[in-house]
Length: 246
Ligand code: DGL
Image 1 (cartoon, rainbow, N blue to C red):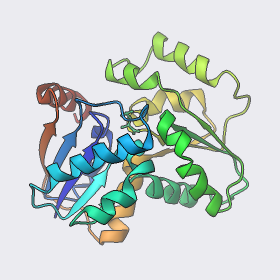
Image 2: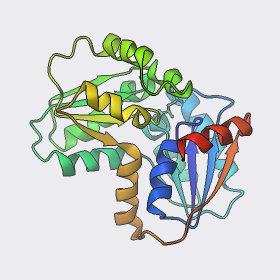
Image 3: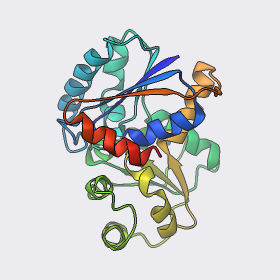
C-alpha cells in the first residue's frame, strides 16, 4: 500500500517516524506546506482552504490512503478532505483519543491536551473525550515549543525555561497528556521528566495502531520507500528528516 502524509511543515515527520518503524506501507509520499507553516495560528477557513489545496497535490500520486499528521488540519479540515478525496483520509485526533481510552480506562482521570492555538480552540479533542465520558479535561497551547523544536533545542535550559513558563499553574501531574501537535513527540522525554506520573499519548504511535486495525495491515519486513516534498525549501525538509528519522 502507498500512503500520503500531509502536514503543515516538517513536524509531520514525527508521524512518519512511527510509520517507518512499523513498516506499514510500501511507499510514503510526504508533503509539508513549509511555505505557509504554521497552520496552528490560522483560522478554520484558511486551514480548510490550505488543506484542500494540498489534496490537489496528492491527487498526482497513486496513493491508497491519506494521513493528516497535522493536528490543526485534523481539527478543522478532516470532513472536507474526506468528502473531496478519492481515497480514505485519516486524521490524528480520533486515533489519539482511542489510544488514550485504551491506556486510561477510568474516565474520571484527568487529561491535559497540549496543542496549537487552533487545535485547542477547535474543541475537537475535548468534544471526543467528552463523548467517551472524560470530564476532567484541560487544554494548553504552548506555541513556543514549536520553534524551539524546529531549532533542534530538544533538551536543555531554553526548553526547561519555556516549560516552566507554560506549566507554572499545574500543581499536580495530569493522569494523561495528549501530545496534540506534531512537534511535541520530539520533546517527549523532557515532558515526561516534567510530569513523571503522567501517561503521554503520541499521535504517531496512535495513528499506527488505528491504521493497523482499520485497514487490517501488518508490518512488513521490507523498508518503506519515503519521498519528501515541500511547498518551499524541500532541501531543508530533507535535512531535518535526516536528523529526525535517524
Ligand atoms: N503541524 C501542526 C500541528 O500538529 C503544528 C505546526 C503548525 O502550527 O503548523 O498542529
